[in-house]
Image 1 (cartoon, rainbow, N blue to C red):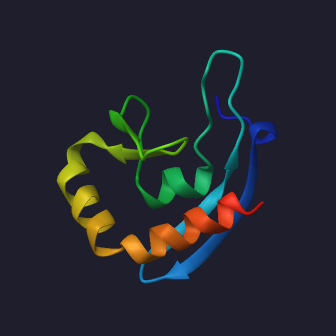
Image 2 (image 1 turned 60 degrees about the vertical axis):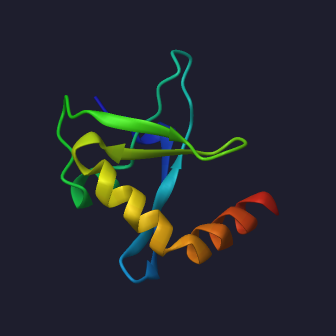
Length: 92
């Protein structure tokens, strides 16, 4: 069961198909809720395998295991946008 008390909706379109879906809080058992907008947009289903990638330092990214190659290509092609997001997060 997904609980809205752990997420804050803040879907923001960055352009070029990039989205920020919200903020989530890590629970006592180390679990994080994926915002409903993200689950719908990515067509995530219960039991779907996700890969958790360390992005250096203290960053993580989730991707459908079935789309790992597409995800890697996406990051390589959009590195400037990713760096911009990282810099904005770091300054808060």
